[in-house]
Image (cartoon, rainbow over all chains, first blue to last red; front, side, top):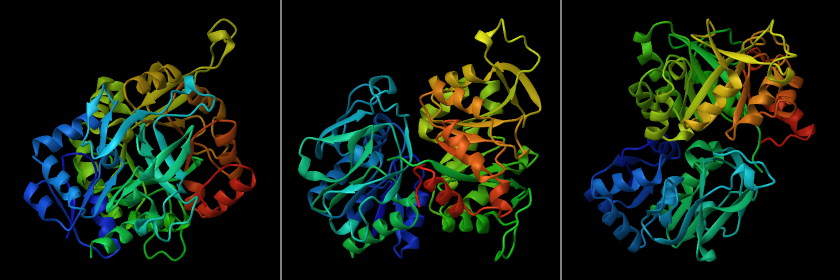
Length: 207
Length: 262
């Protein structure tokens, strides 16, 4: 069973419906026991880093998630669910993350600091360059478009975890992979056909 | 590269699409879910539902529309119209909306924008601005000879005296993640967006700006993105009446050097 972790933020229903569309049942829960017993976990996320860590902590979800990942079971982080895996984020002051992937979460350079004159949030459809074509990205051509909405991006210490990059003023990491741990900065559940393809690929891994 | 977005807007009244939708192969031209599915197939980048239901008591209807649409389409969904309370936003997001657009409530109490962007994140708070050019002013003495625009609330019925550019900057400071900018002078006239207004706002803020109001042909969309420097263009009638499909629009824009998702 696929479990979507509910920690009181954002729109989880779209992720659930996305899995249903490609033939998988996913349950939404904040019960640490159910999270521990899952076959696969999805950690979606919108909102602020600090609040999300706080909510995960309050619901007693941090240890079950870490244990789950350490066992090598399939995990998919989406948007903030990617950022939370990192050591720390500089959103609203420096805050500790789950520290499963070493590295930082930093803000896009202000328009005043670049010649590119970019707007923040990075909002809309942008293309990905695939560096590591793992199972979850099967059938996704290079330069495919996905829907992004974020102001911060991840900088992993170990570049080997980078699976995709995207250009927005800077070339940033838009997907990471480490064994069965996958995480994407964009929203597959909002990226029409190709996004659903990623959800389907993830569903196939867990069965 | 980030693409420019093409956004069809559906006016929804009591659960039905209004303002005349003229689709072929549609069982029921007034069903928002069916219309949304067609736009998704054609490659729309986002959808906006504007709830024009007159009374606040009928809010459950738009929530139901969003709920049903989110089961069928997998693209960003923005809902605007009559949003006044934190609970309104929570209910819409829970039903499957990704963003909400706020207009009158922001003008009445600008701190509301600050509060809800802290609760839900800037990414889902769109501030909608209805602006009208100020006429009859002696421009030679004021604003360095520049034009001014004033914002209106209550669906464009009530003037506020607030300067549109200053208001957009303030809303950015208060945490808005995007501006949906409608020119009231141009809305419904099909003479093109107010590109001067759009450019002024787009250059004044660091958040994305969606141009709205006045698109009557394919060239207008191009002008909004180039002369107006908008990040996205919103249109209703040219898509509803099938004057162009979204795909045709995108092909045209791409041929003229605009980066779009095809």
